Length: 112
Image (cartoon, rainbow, N blue to C red; front, side, top):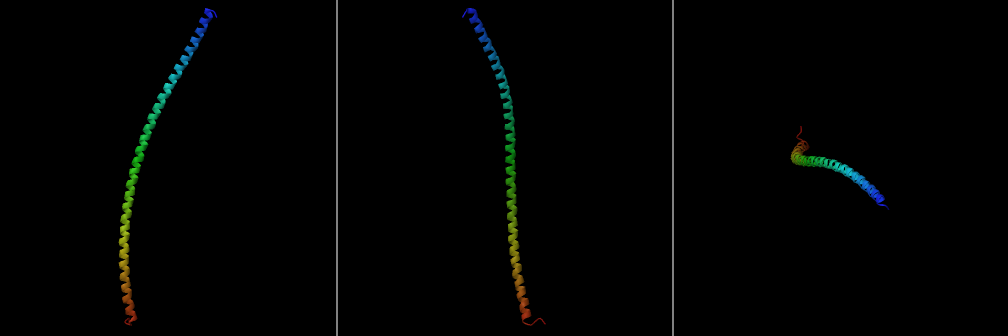
């Protein structure tokens, strides 16, 4: 191979390498832009996740508070039902006494 052919061959290889380097640089630039966009999206997603976590935490707290309120309301209702049952038992006892008095009255012939 002559020195001129060698020189041409080296020039072609250098042009090939320069083109490859230019393509790689362009691709790296595009990749950098993609990384920047992805980074922005990850930041946005992090913000959304933080908002969602705060919402869920607040929702859980409010739900727990509501369960406590419902449990307290149920406890008061149970107490009222217990008092009502006791009152009903006293009324039943008094009615039974009254019925006994009326039955004795009519069974003894004092009704007239």
